[in-house]
Length: 263
Image (tube, rainbow, N blue to C red):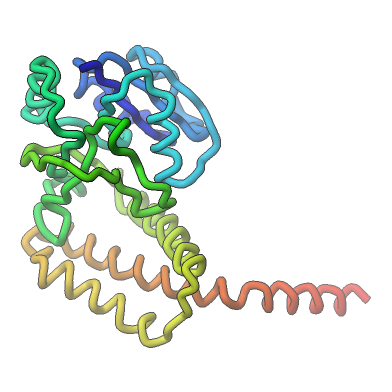
């Protein structure tokens, strides 16, 4: 039962080494980079990884491509800002040593750390993630966002993947902006129409859901910041969907205005 660790990344020099070392027992490490400008690839190679640099395809296709580049059928798939906790690493190492291949996929709880503390509420935990699987029977979906491993049979193990999603508030805002772009484009592809009602109500309901219903308030000020950020991300998603629906009109108007001025 040989295992490949598959990692996708972009500018993750602060995390890539911990990610790789947390699974030191794997037989192979494959890193698929998408244009890092920092030392990510250099550090990964120093840890013995096979490093590839390819154009970004979207989350699902990129992770599936990383799996394709692996030599072994059993895949441990991690993002660069994740690593295995010691109990989970030991569990998987023992599982591999015993060559227990009855299941085709395993999912684990994921705990995130942000603004100096462990975030246990607001919908952030246990945040189950399917990350260990046999690629002959399971693999990543083709979704460009909200990707997941598709498997018929899976076993849930309550041992943690450690997640460090944001370096700081600036990073959180940047990520929310990026994800809201992808989400609005996904809505447009699905033929969803802009709704002024949803633009107003969805951000409010998201804050209530994460901060009150899912008890984000128990994570102190970071919990409040996370809930406000989640609410704003939803607002951006619907605002950008409205923008996408008017882009062609605005482009034509701007072109006509420039032509009139240049005459």
